[in-house]
Image 1 (cartoon, rainbow, N blue to C red):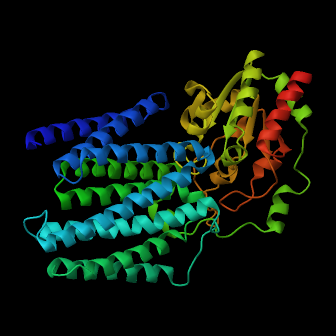
Image 2: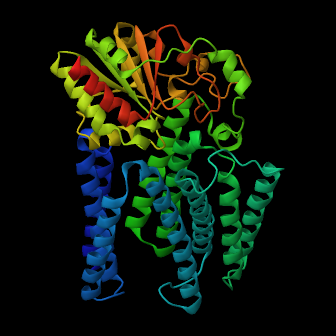
Length: 467
């Protein structure tokens, strides 16, 4: 295939990636953005395979069919609650693939294949892609294990963990320099890759479930950087562009998530937030004698007299798969003339946009999903707020910025306590990921509706219809 034609197709693929990213910035155009990005990737892969004369078109077609079937089955079988795990494992595969591919490319270069010479730029790109790819691979596997429940979600704080991480990082740097200075063998590279894989584990195990949205965004950025480094090694422009886009988008999203939590990335990575859980005595000081439990029938009576209701979704809604029951509740309230909106906190759930995707699955209209800055000023005019499975993002303790023991101090929250009435649907008074009690549960205008989110939403609809 002519070089000009290859570059033309690469240019088309790059434009599709950029347009896809732009469309994915809004829920209404996100599906189209996904399709554009997938089309760009398909063009890039097929053109590359033809360009390098790697395999025949029969094998390419067979690969598309088999890969498409595997992807379709995975997409249909993975529940919406498992999307964070799916993203985490995809990040890991991306980083691991880049690390292995650049290692293989270096071995081919040593043999004199594919590459004309081994220079400093080439070996530096190999070392950088391997270092970042190794961290991304094992770090993502740890994130997957924590989200899947295969590991304790709470931070695992090793003794002298900061010193261990510094030593491992320095070892990677030294080995990388040795590799660049003396690139006569791939042994140093594989040792460096092994050390970076260990570093990926030690960096992520001290991070708790509450910080997983940030970690996933950061690992996504790492996988993009590893892919860009892979592109430099292969001198492949579309891989450099796509990797850079993924990397920059991941870093931007990480910064947005940190801002939403009012914490620095350093604090997220190294503070071990969530390790300490409130004791029973501490919880009693906040809750004892002040929590008011209600039945679905009592909450239904409250909703009957309402004109405006705001629903706050959280991870508990995802676990209970309550989105369809919530849709039924929304439809019924609106049929009675009640205005219903959804308040979306930037870090609700376990990955960026988790709640938006979950509600979109139940065909909740996009214009009902209100971001924090938009919905917060309206809570004072709201009759009832229904908090479903959310905890830390509605905890008024976050406003206490002077308490050094407060892990969510200064974090912007949804000001649901300003509404006339608040109904919290929750299985128990157990603390959220931050491990602290929530005074909202014992507030004068709050009612606790204890139980599974899906069952309680269904019970509310039944109670409203039977009233």
